[in-house]
Amino acid sequence: MFRHVLDDRRCLRLGLIALPVWLGMFVAALPGPAAEIVRVEEDWQLQVATPDPVSDAPQVTCLISPLGDVRSIHAAFELNQRSLPHFSAGGLQLQLWNGESPQGNVQAAATEIMGQPDEIVTWTQSMEIVGGVLKFAVINGHSTTWGDFGGDGLLKIDVPTTLTNLNLYDPQVSVDNSAVGFAANRVTSLVLKRVRVVTNTGETAEDTTPRIVQGQP
Image (cartoon, rainbow, N blue to C red):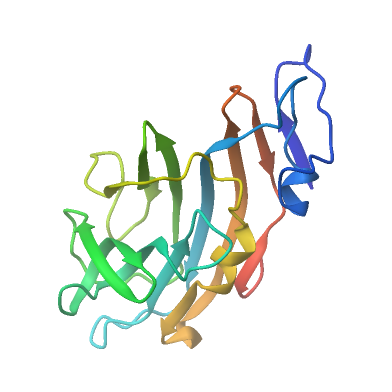
């Protein structure tokens, strides 16, 4: 289901050949050159049924990439674990990777281990290109275990880039490379609830199609 978040005075033109198929059905172009995507936001939801703080279960990782794969630069967001530079139980960590090589990491201030049954965690993963810099961030996080997170700027990583747009972004890459890596039986669902993109012309569009990693939307 596609929803255009635009001024009603502006009309959207579908089928942009300069973009991947899903974006061609998703993003509007104003007259002139094809639109370039400069910001992406993914809204995620994790529902945990029966966590086990003794074994630090479950452990979840969600990836986001500016390209159509994860063979080069991408970010990984870990929940209830911090695996870099060595494993620590609980907490939240945002990591920068180049293929299979870690490039850096930051973590939230809260380091608690999940232990609340039926907990629902929501957050937004974003990436943006600004002046030759690719900016990854986790924002608008809400949970019982860690409270609100992502509003203090701790879960952000910037990296220089030669990319000029995010047109190769594909939400299915995020879904295919995200998982409950440990104790999946303790998780009710992990879902990419919606995706928003912003173009260099200031247009914003939103895709409200749930994309399921595990369970039900």
